[in-house]
Image (cartoon, rainbow, N blue to C red; front, side, top):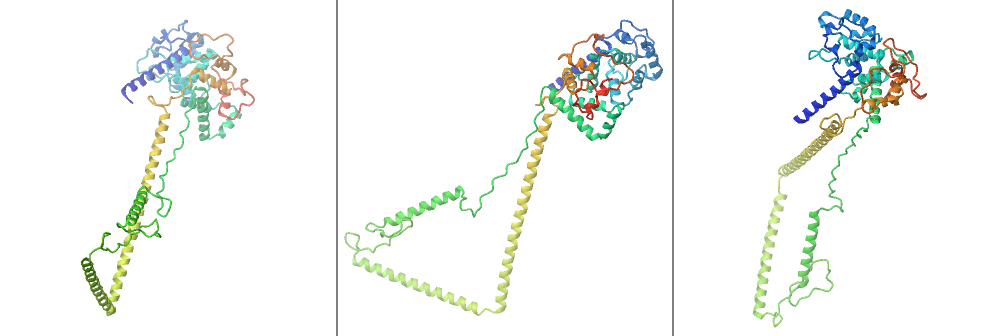
Length: 484
C-alpha cells in the first residue's frame, strides 16, 4: 500500500470516528456542540451547580442531585474525578458488570469534550448523568440509535459483519433470560452458538447491505499433459516419421525410374512390378552402329573376366583355409579354457544386465522425483492463488472487492425484518430515514412507552413477531432483551 493510500485511509478512519462521536453526543447531550457543564473539571462535577437549561438535567429532574451524590460515594480519590465501570450499578440496569452489554454502554457514554488529551478511558459524572437521562426519558427513536451505537463496536458509525456478530452474541450472553429461553440457550454450546451467530450476521449482510457476497472461487483443476504416443501404436506417428516415410517413397520412385530407363537400346521386362525398383542387366556390347565392339575389344574383355574369376577363386580358397584353422583351434581347445571363457561371458552378461537394471531404476527414481516435485509445485501454486483470491475478497483499502456495511437505516430494517423489536422500537425503526438527522431533545408524543432505568421487563413474545418466529433461535431469544 502506498503512502497516499495510507493517508487516505487514516483520514477516512478519522472522519468515521468523528461521525460516531457526533451521533453519541447528540443522543447523550442533545447537541454536537460543547455544553457549558463540560467545562467543569471532572472532580468538581459531583457538587457543581446544576444548569436548568441543560438537557441532561432536564431529563433527570430532581433525581440528578441524588445520583451525583451516589456517584461521589463510589468515586476513588486517586481517579481524579473519573468513574470506573461499577458506576453503572447506580443506574439499576440489573446488568452484570462483566457483561458485554455493560462494557459497550460504558464505552458508548464516553463522549464528553474539553478533557485533557489523551483522556482516560473512564466515565465522568456528567457522562453517567447523560446516559441515565437517555435511558430514562429518551424517545423510542433515540433508544434505537443508542442500540445502534452499542452494536457499532469499532466506532465507525456503521455496522460491519464483525460488529453484528459481537452485538448479537453480547445480547445472548445476558443472564436475565426468561426460564424457557435460558434452557434453550444452555443447550447451545459455544461452538454452535458462534456458528449460528455468524450465519445470521452473514445473511443480514447479504440481504440488507445492498451488495451480495462475492461468489466462492471456482475449483481450479490442473490440466494433465498429453500422454506420449506409444511406440507400438501403428496409428501414432510423429512429424519426423512422416518425413522419413515420404523420403523413402521418393527414393524408391527414383530408383524405379532409373532402373526402367535402362540403356540406349534396353527395355524393362513387361512383367516387372511397378512398385519395386528394377534394374535391367546391362546388355553385352556388340559392334556395329548400335554400340557393337570390335573383336580385339571383346578379347580384352574376356581376358579381364578370366583374371577377375581367378582372383575370386584365390580369395575364396584363403577364406576357407582361415575358417578351417579357426575350427581346428576351437576343437582342440582345453576344457579348462573353455569353462573359463564361458564363465567370463556369463560374468559379462550378468554385469551388463545389472548395469541395465541399475540404469532403469535410476531413471525411474528420477522420473518419480521429478513428477512428485512437479505435482507439489502445482499444488503450492494453486494454494497460493486461492489464498490470494481469498485475501482479495477480504477487507482491503486499495483492493478489489468492496467491504459490506450496514447503515443505521439498513440495520433498522434488518431488526424490523427479524421481528424481534418491541412495538415502540419497531415503530421507530419503520420511521428510520436513509440519512440520520438530529432528533428533537424531547420525546415525540405518542411514540410509545418509555423505557425506564429500572429492572428489565420480560416479554414472552413481541406482538410484532409472527406465529412462525422460532423461539429457540438466537434472534428469538433477543425479543425479551430488546424490550428493555
